[in-house]
Image 1: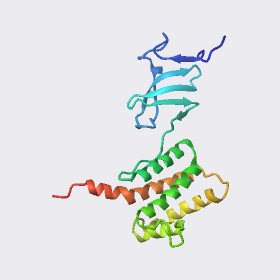
Image 2: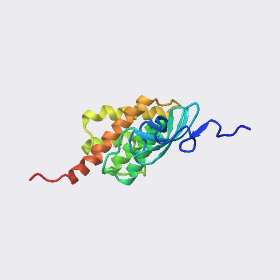
Image 3: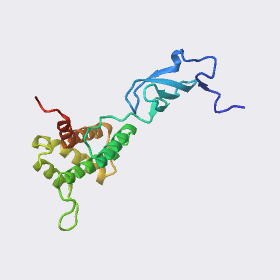
Image 4: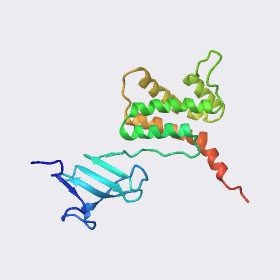
Length: 204
């Protein structure tokens, strides 16, 4: 009778494979630590399914037809971010990694508005209403967090975000990465530059 293990080779448990076998190792990008080499724990005979472990951080990764889980998260984490912003940025990167591009763009838009409030824009006006996107952008420019030259990029977030907000129109990978790349730059300007300066030793 067939079993779920018939086409699976588990390394170190069958005579065919061992630690010195080429098949026991694989190259790729670790989604956790960005190392590039994995130990193959097991794989199917067709080699389209594999269970891997990063040789550096020991994270377990599953590859199904060349699609890894957990996915590699693009972009980077700017330093100096408060916890709330850091958590949202982490979620944006996770969305990009798994192809949830519309969700990533909506979170980028929300994060931009949150940064404006964190930099002095009142969370509510006299009518108990939250600021709109344009007010947030104006505040970021007025406070010098972003410059006039960066406004076209903010407009890009607004345009793509509006499409995602008001229409059933999926956002593509390129547009999502455009928006997320600018959002990363905004986080660097809003938090990382101050954090870097605070850690820099004064000139002697």
